[in-house]
Length: 348
Image 1 (cartoon, helix red, strand yellow):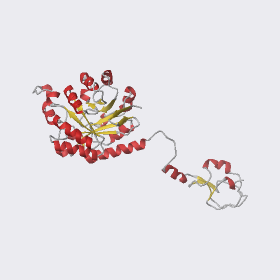
Image 2 (cartoon, one colour):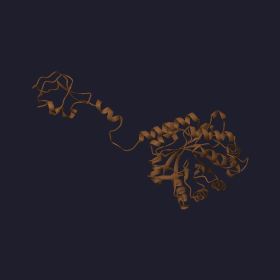
Image 3 (tube, rainbow, N blue to C red):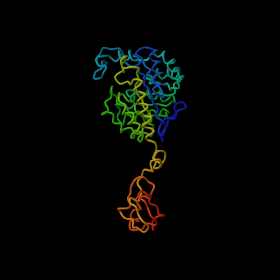
Image 4 (tube, helix red, strand yellow):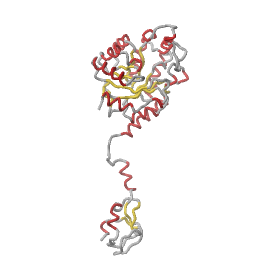
């Protein structure tokens, strides 16, 4: 059983799935929109809201060189600096966003992209951290996050097993004892056929940590499937409306969609239950409709039981069908009407 603790919430195996609404760039540059996102995330069933803490200058440099131009994604044609300038969450918003989330009973945390962001978030006293897939290979950043002593959720998009192992070792060497790994496909949006969710139980087995899914699709099936495979954390990008624009709109769920996902995940949790062969609840009520042995023709005392006058039929008020071979050839102890459940008291 693998667990970590965020505030008073235990997250991991055998615990309720922890649902994270990733706000990312979906504030579209408006603090009011960011605050509304938090309120709607709570209504939709999120347990936590997450932001990203960076500026264009902490992510890259402003350069026209070809290296810094985006190709092959929905952001093609833009420079990294331009994209991050549009998408970043202003640092001065963070205290108000955190206060708003916590007043609504939500966990508020962030993804820092450099050590200055870690220092800033430590002053805010966030309860945990997220490592983005792209930063999994930034070992100095991982060590700085781990040194805070707080739980870490680390996405594994694009990473080989060896790279994940290296990252886990860096965190543990720096003193991290609470970590979760999130299966992630770093495509935007992510096609289901590239998700390989069967990796989830392998991650748990390989690293002995809670596992989850950071999902960049608009589908509801992947989170449900992930939970069935052992995921205890689901992270999805969240927007008020894809029509508002925003850099992440193509892979962000609207409130009604997020709520449908939460409902589906919680239903999947209930359905998974535990290993059990107990008969209880509604099943006990249904037992009466099993088959049993009934007299299906009028019989006189002394008549022989045969396949013609005794049958296995529903409901279950007579002897179990397994006793039919013992009944055949024996005689009735009394007169029996058609439709009488057969019991040992009328068999001689």
